[in-house]
Length: 84
Image (cartoon, rainbow, N blue to C red; front, top):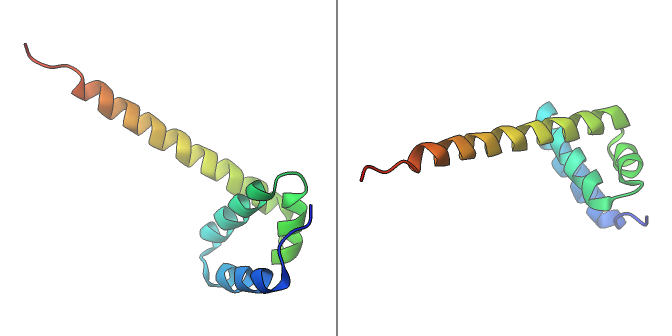
C-alpha cells in the first residue's frame, strides 16, 4: 500500500484538524476503508491517532447505515398500503 502523496497528506491533515471529534473518527474510518489492507495503520500514523479510534468510527458508520436503512424500509412499508 503506497498511500497518498505529501501534498494530499498535508491537505488531509489540515481538513482533519478542523473537524469535530466524531467527524474525525468518521473521516479517518472512511479514508482507511478506501485504502484497504494496511489502511488503518497508514491513516492512524498520518493523523497521529490510535487504530482503535478508526475501528470505532467504522462501527459508528455501520450503525448509522443500518439505522438509515431501517428507517427507509419502515417508511416504504407504510406507504405500500393503498385504499382500493
